Image (tube, rainbow, N blue to C red; front, top):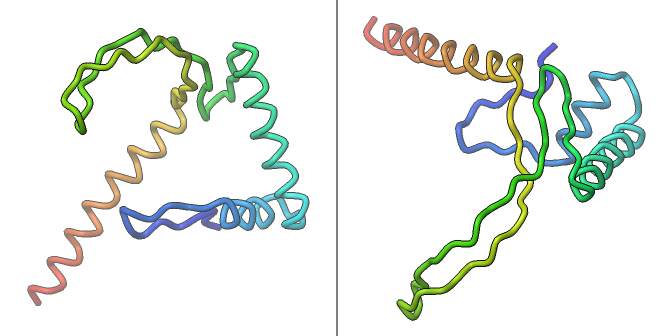
Length: 121
């Protein structure tokens, strides 16, 4: 069973599609899947707001990183603007996720090569 099939490079899975896939995969109702997804998101947000790191082994880690103060140039006025230091959420993918994405990218060129050879016949 394929959880979510992405065929176009510019395709984005939205929340309702993710809920539907979760419900199917976990064999629960979409309402329960939506509650679970909302609870996960809320829990991660609360942990990050406290400065905690959230690790999901094999998937990745969510953490808060400090962004230094920096100077940028306003495209509208051309003036230099000072952007204050801030904290930003960050995600670092885990080994399993990296491998899954790399395997998907390797499979795509082979499929494209097969299509090209089919056209030549």
